[in-house]
Image 1 (tube, rainbow, N blue to C red):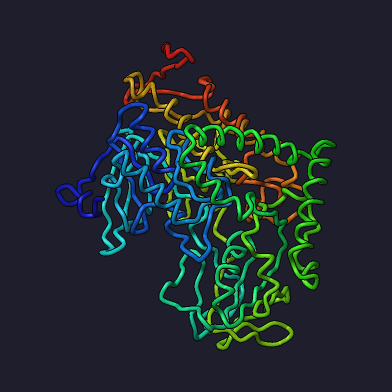
Image 2: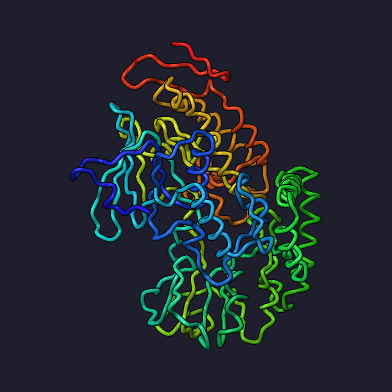
Length: 532
């Protein structure tokens, strides 16, 4: 681990590394490991706003925090983990796995914690990125430069602000799930939880047995599926994973093909409708069986399954049967000093927990200003496009040698974001290979190629269940060219499709140049180049 002070050289002179990465979670660790595995490169620096590595899985330390993707896929293909104790691992297991991989590739010593990268600007005459970084402890700003810039900031870290007035008047603890107050003992307390997405559904059963009373305030509905493996089979899963050689690889392929097959349900076709109808019937039977009848109308959605992120039930529906748990969909008017006011009166509370989600979509890279050629910014670039977008989810014209890991339209509604991150990183490292070989110094995607790609993505998404009418975080808050139909989050095709696109770059969509030289370099699929 390094400190902010270690990055300074001779006062204001910037420090330098060949690669710079914002973040230190799954995507960043994958980048560092792949650079070393593929090219033997270790000259990379990671800048992290938190005090430890882990990103999402360091920030989200709330009770019950766990992954909602099978562990066989929510791990690196090059680092299978036989130590998983359950199919959907708890946060602590995920963080331990990340730390082990980071240590194996000697990455922590290249990480600087408690810093915020406020601005990244492309320095044209030297073909480098300059990062303006603020020390979270001293508030001092220092500079760092790099040949290549990657962002790996994740999507479930920055808490969404509560849109209910009066939060500042509450005289007792109120906090977001991603800023959990471990110093607050919930035992015997009256707790109000806002939000019933995956996070809220994990928190409620995890704390229900210790609180005096829990009121769960919900505004939207979600399709809830049974947990993938029964309680009695969890120990068997852990034993097989640990002691049967090759099992993790076999399981990875099985789960991958199963999730890819399920992608048919996202298409608004007759076959897709049949698939969704079966899923809907199964989920509805389960929800009616597990939840109290008095709550069925509050819980069971009217919209299509797969339109929003599904929830694997962590015991949430069963917990609603407890005498000390109340579910309400009454509109909250305001937060008052003693609790929460609805039109029916005040719900008294000792603690308020906000599980109301995260800043996503159009606010990707929130807190960091990315400035490319001619002073252009990512936000202005997206405004011209019509919404957040990037070529192959990672590159933008006017921003040379820059790649966003899990950038716009990289999220998957059916499988693992870790697979998407790996594909993105593998693609980016293939693109910059000519630069590493000394054939060029700058790589930049062509504007027309980016526009064509982004338009194809948005057109494809309008033909999927994501556009069928549910209220989802997948959509940008400001909409797009045709109103509120711009989806900056989801990839509209399978991960097999993304893998193929990332394996075979379309070189004609890229421009390579040598710093200080007016001519450009043409790179073909075979690695040959010719002057234009």
